[in-house]
Image 1 (tube, helix red, strand yellow):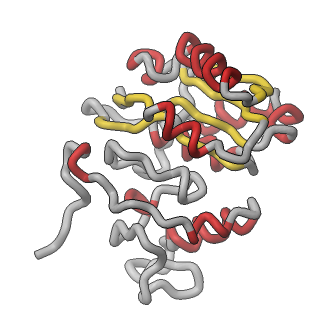
Image 2 (cartoon, rainbow, N blue to C red):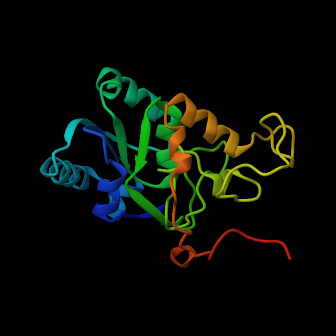
Length: 214
């Protein structure tokens, strides 16, 4: 079970600044168990956002958002509604947020922070996509986690070792920051990389940050 907690509402509202229409996604799996993204929490989020003048175009409750084939199938049923929305707000773990980002050509906002894997793993078996850092930054990186997917866990862009979109560690490994730049460009949001972001708060992470070599 991936343990999550909702981000402060002020932070969520700030991430939606300038966006009028939002589609909500909740998870019947771990997020429902944590009471951070079940149907009750999705409906409460809908109420709070509507009070702030946002239009909620619809919502989808998915059994396990981290199950990519299932998520693609569920989102396809809302294809037209999602296309008409400015963005998607996802209330679940970081893996689920990335699953949605990989399944929809839309801006995707995380509504939760993942604080622990609880000794379990997500359904997306291709690779570990979330390191449970407790302070999710996927809002700034197009739904692609540089902490989990960059070999150096870089937070400020690609290193000098990447070549032709590949990581210097292996020619079979895509550069996470190249993927981020390409997705932001596709969404017309490359300007997000100009945002000044405060230093990451590693104190909320159980691991106190990614491993480092000495």
